[in-house]
Length: 158
Image 1 (tube, rainbow, N blue to C red):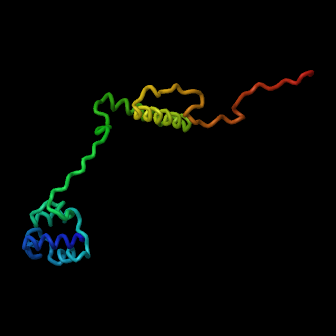
Image 2 (image 1 turned 90 degrees about the horizontal axis):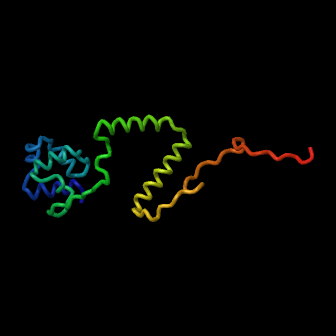
Image 3 (image 1 turned 135 degrees about the vertical axis):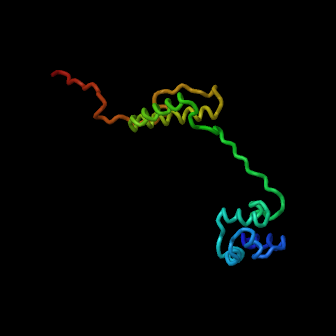
């Protein structure tokens, strides 16, 4: 069932004509006909006008039965991630300033460390915490041979 069919069914169930709806909400009869026939889709503001003209809540245009749908409740882990105090604002400003000055390698290191911390927090098991060893978890680019200083071998007998 399209929106136009649903709108027409509700209008006819309430024994209202397109002219009655026109008088109640101020929309033209030709517009209402185009909505009912599926030629145009009304905007949200227009849906509210049509719902108030039909004296129904807006959601009933989209529900087949007369029951009120159960609202979807989404809970966020941190509802207010923004700083609340002046002290927090200043701390975030200094953090932003410091982060803007770091190079790409340090930025990658910082992101790897924070990802590791988050994954450990999500596991909620401190017994699994390991001490990082050299080369563990952090995959940083190795230094090029030109940068590495190695002692040179001395020739014997010279």
